[in-house]
Image (cartoon, rainbow, N blue to C red; front, side, top):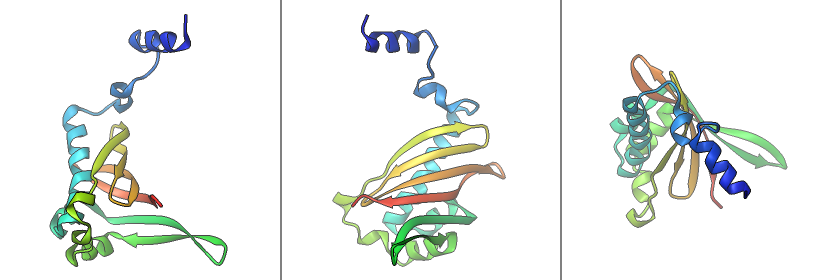
Length: 147
């Protein structure tokens, strides 16, 4: 029997966790709310809707990218307020509509935590989203440019 057939049979029998099982401990409503939070972030950015961006972010969020300066890696941070202000200033509105991407993938979720990937225009965001006072908020983002 081929390996592919064995893997498929194991998944069907419940021996290997498939995508539906990766979100253990959260409801369909939570999954939808996590996705909505990520979309508030990226679609709010593109549309210049600072309130939508604010709604998505925990006030203590830090967004980071690894940069190399003088041959040394450094972390370049951005705060929640900087993202909100940049959104209000129209940073995302400069991205042509046909170039905008807003693909959201929940990588994993458990109880009050989720890891989410957002494929955007020229970058990818890896987010940690937490249930905070009954709402899902982005608390950390590690991002990378495509090029």
